[in-house]
Image (cartoon, rainbow, N blue to C red; front, side):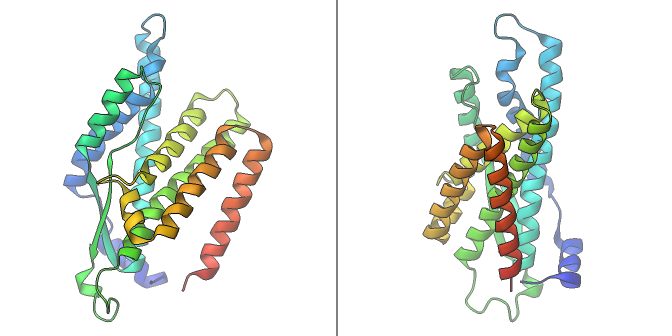
Length: 243
């Protein structure tokens, strides 16, 4: 693991979203936004302009959430000496879209794909004595879920301050569902990387998503306070235990 100047140099040289990543991420943003606003176009009568406005708002939320999640994973991977790339899953997107249509938007999922990592060849010497680590790969995937939990807490704070905010309520729901779906041990989903990399980390991650779901989705003051406290303690411990 590196920090400081070396990390900044790696980010400058290696951090990017390639064309093949954007080719899936961009349509996935709009499809995901459509799924999360499907019921907002008007339950009894079709409301085009209201639905379009909601679609634009949620598209912004989805774009920020996607790029924040995958950027977090890419930067953590660079710290560990890997290059991480987003690998889309069109089958998962289709499954989520069909499920949205069948349930009339009541079960929106985010199954857009996950992260795959590879060695930074120029920096390999002296860092990877035993080859590619499945545990490192699991940690990279895990940090994507951590990113979504941070965003969910942020949107939950905004929702507490502005209880009727469509923006913050959708941001909270989207990021928690992203974290939940990422735990599924499915092909092309980060949960499978965590499952094969470390069973304790996998079960701990699943428990974390469940706990934060209970604390945040109930939208109670004590739940939000506990969520912020647990997240802050976790961040402090993570910083103190980094080599």
